[in-house]
Amino acid sequence: MRRADGFADGSKVCKNLRMGEAVRRSDTPVRQPMSSGGIEPMGRFLPNRIVLHGASALALTVCNLTLHPMKRNQALRTAVGMGGFFVRHLIAVLVTVVVPCLLWTITYLALLLWAVFTNSDIGGPLAYPAGIIVIIVAATVASFVLLLPSTALAEWLAKRRGLPILVQIPISIGILGSLCFILVAVAASVDTAPSMPGAAAVFGVLFASNLLPLGLYWWTAQSGPLLFSLWKLTRKNQEDF
Image (cartoon, rainbow, N blue to C red; front, top):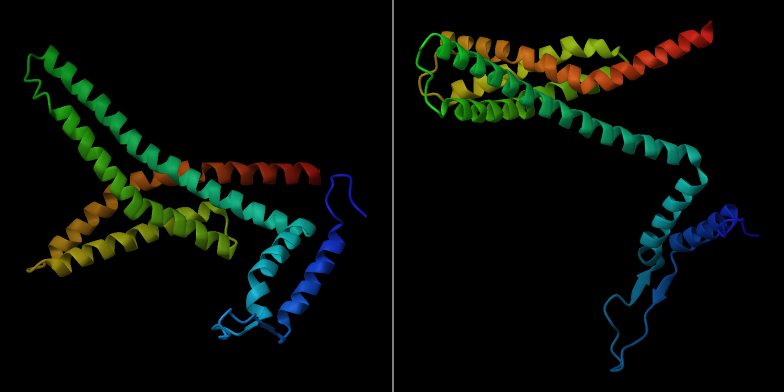
């Protein structure tokens, strides 16, 4: 019996696959034919376990995904979640780089207008592009070394513990402090004459200078899940009433 779409009935397909699985698990060896010279080839007895393992495993996986909607939906949700994770953090990195560049552009134009109206020195022509390059490099490095791990790890911990999404904010701040401490400790260990006050000052500057970028990064990356959770909560409240 066949369906309207031309595919064989699912139960019959799985029955055949189970029969193939039983054959695969048998211990009966498969004898290979002798060569023309009468010499037994290497691997004379090749178990069906090895011959049919790859094909039957792939076929059973396809069968499970086809006949079990729950498994198929779970795989689809996993793929969508991973894709959304990468897209959200990619947008967050771009925003974290673009916003400081815009702020630098506005600041440079304001200083340029101030210099023109006050007859002051407007500076060299390389000041603006040099500042843009420094900002792009610094923001990119900070995003991938500090901001992305802090936000992603906080998100993973909160979801694993079933915590509200806003609890990720203090968790990400704590992870940021830990990462800054690790970077400063590594730099101090490389230094031939490390200074504890100097290392503490570097840690304070590094941590404080990344708090605002972390906030920008977190709100950009988590705005979608936050709005979605608020929508689900509103919909649940409306259904209750």
